[in-house]
Picture (spheres, one colour):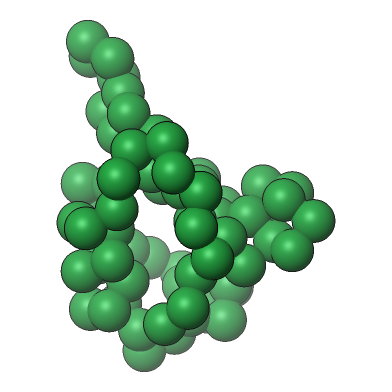
Length: 67
């Protein structure tokens, strides 16, 4: 699974994209909102680690999600 942080413009907020191994979009959510329904993506119980990773991500840089 891969993660990328997308920079918003003007009134559009920053977003996070989760993509599978074929780079198909599987999740798209606001970077500033609490993380919900992570069990859908196999990330249950990893909310704190994912939130810390999101805070440290650079905008527009795709990276492998390893938490």
